[in-house]
Image: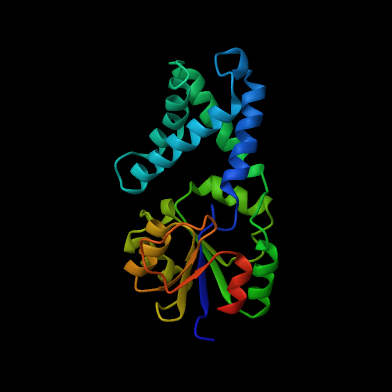
Length: 231
């Protein structure tokens, strides 16, 4: 086998963040009675949250804001869109969201099957994630993904964020892997694919959303089953 070590992203690649976040926010919408506080439309609430979350994550990965600011400001800005300047509620929702989100278990189709296939082929598999360490470990455990991965490399442990080369260097050191025997697999062109390229790794772009690529991965797939054609 050309590759020995497979480095996977977690959110949006294996673990369906969009579906799990939507279910979590729906639960919070009901339990906090947001419909009685000025947020009359859950669909719009989720759309605004997704918009702000994406923008703030981009700022976070580029080092412009800290983790704590990301956590509560995505809620704060969402509520502001409904003319609710309620900082205590924003911080309460932020805490509840990160408590409940990791309990959700929705994975992309064929996730367990492909990981089982790769494990049986004796690949050594690891996760490289920008997500919050405690939250990510809970997600992995609750979704029964922990049995597949030897190491979980987080931005907190490495003191770096994808796409910075430092987090990949840390991952290689922690796993004992070399660049030539490693490949990075993820959905985010800037964090995962450009990050892997920055580290000198081959890459697989998991293009679930069928977007037009603006980077040049080694391989592109549109469904996780297609990994069987590469690995």
